[in-house]
Length: 376
Image (tube, rainbow, N blue to C red):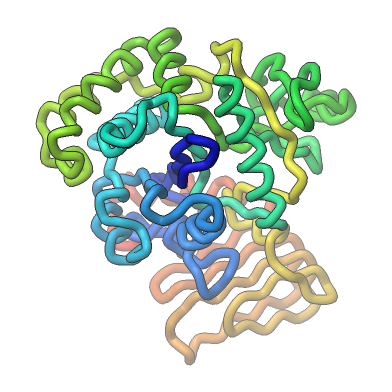
């Protein structure tokens, strides 16, 4: 979409494995391909539909893994196949977004310069309570980034002293609701997290970024030149055939990517640049990172339980019971439980206390170590 002379694009990051959502999330169908929030739509579909009123389908890009690329092309017919890009190797988010910038510079070379391309970097698997407000804030963030050559992040207004997220320390007001970023803070311990909440000028880092393509490229050239200096080279190669890297058939692109450092966009650019701003969110948000997040995104019964599928719950409180089995003969019953999680699929069952939800990933690692990939 062209607005005020700018070609607006979106990049949706969709390469994660979602191991904390085992046994529903599997290697070939991870979290972003599951209907975890709306039971009739995959999370990646929700992410696309969320941004489509602002940015047309032909300018929405999905960055994923080679394992998932073909599946996503089949399952997401609204997105042009060439816009579903597989990163050649796992190298974290800075190289991943560098490849996306190269693809866009090549694809739009005949109609606009990098200064005229702006990008919203979004996630495939998060929850937003008010999508209209979310879109308005995307527009506000993009407009500021376009006009001021800034990198804008959408900071999440914290609802609790969370130790699982990084934080953003906010400074002075720049324009409207947009604030200067003083610094990024690593995931804190419980005491420090409470101090951040009490201070009132800290936001969660939600991993969403907005920038002009030239701002992003110049920032990487300055702060992470091993990556930044290769963007125009990749774009030049891709101008001849933008499908080459997208189909994973370019040895040159693969070699360039393979030599990139494994570095996040947060560390490679955001924490080092001096032109970073933040827009505080005006909606409820959740990263839907593990089974306990269903407490924050689903409806509850009178005893604060969350139930999905064919279930019976008796004398239980604050418990999540999710039956995803396709066998209509399987009933899952929970009796006398509190603060527990039960998840059932056709071939696997997970049972754990809510405060151990993060450790589901450890179970996956143990199974892999034992050679039990059949169930992964």
